[in-house]
Length: 394
Image (cartoon, rainbow, N blue to C red):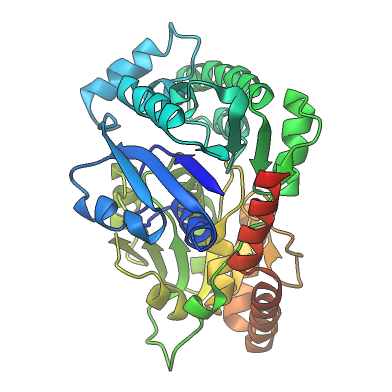
């Protein structure tokens, strides 16, 4: 097949779950299909365009710089969001140049499918009726949960308005496209319930188990590890909750317990919480997350906000690090509490689960082995890509 793939960014450096999922899919789809890739190009990331041939036959960079969220310009976008029907998260990705490029390509090439990767590029696609929406999250669900955990009434009011606009926009796009592909059965069911899509499809989450397999005797780095982009609101909220509510309970039981927070672009709030806790090591961007997973005893996923599925859970399992997660963090992955993962939603339960795995060597080993067996036998990216390909031609 000849595919036109549209996204708001290129895939290197690969620092987000959405990057990883798309990259692993496209690397395998490229073996059997001709991929044309359109995305915004950040000139500060020269590697991004250079490595596009790893997953595409042709790449079309669009010069467009998203406004930095710490800038006055972003504050202006937020104010503008008060008066726009379109949610801010979508408005900031509109590009006349991208739309024109897509129009030219559709006229000059004969594509078997056009894929909109995430909801954000949707305003730039001329005819959504011929498009497949690859939806890594139910975006409105993320905004709804952010509203529930807002720290003050003004913020809650703003987020509630944005959540409503996101639900309206997401529903409109889902009903216009010829097919929606979600990343979990739970997300597909939610889109059916909220947006009336009759038969939303989904593909499971995968992992390259061999890539994450432990090599040799890894050097110890921390008792607990959190891996994730530290400029993404659900991760910021999760690690803040863990530091305030859970970590003090763990330290009462294990005063020497250490936590490594591993991820790109830590915002000021994350930097400040790490600075006030001697137990925390904040790394910022690292060239390879595997040594941090290999050298830690337990991987934590304390998310209270989110959607889609967390690739970081399967990666930790493949790396031999047992996982403690909230129910939201492990949503849609098909894992079982007590068998392949520990699920805990209150600070007390989360702390207890972490301490139990740190202190009970036999339980730690049992959970590690069961999780590793699951991802090795059931979660190959080749199988996921094959499932995705079948949905494109169905």
